Amino acid sequence: MKYRLSGEIAYLLGIAIAIVLSFFPDTSSNGGTVSSFSLDYYTSTVILVVLGLVIGLVNFWVKDPIKLLTVTIGLMVAGQYLDAIASSYGYFGSNLVIMSAPIAFILCLKILIERARMGSDSVDTA
View (spheres, rainbow, N blue to C red):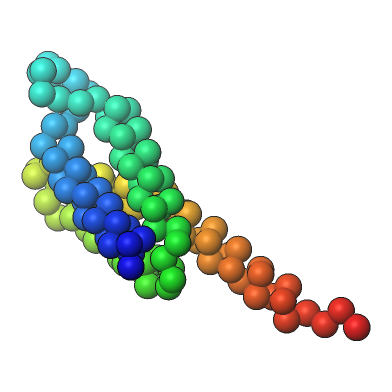
């Protein structure tokens, strides 16, 4: 229960940070001046990837990773559509995709490890 609750809180906190980071777009690439409240694309990407890795590792011990992987993939697809529909409202969709990719990678690794263990347990050695 403790791991499940901390994983859910970490995931929701990550979504909140992705929302907050979308309000500080990189204005230097489109001819604007960099204000004191803007982050360059590299910095926000590093923050979101590290955050995604932490969320993935916190959720590594979840009992049913397929449900969480389904939610993560759905969030990535929704992020792509959000960017296509409302690109004038910031980079929230891209931030969701950037944060979700490491989470999906770690969950896929966990599922592969579990499947490999189940496959090796069921092999006859006789």
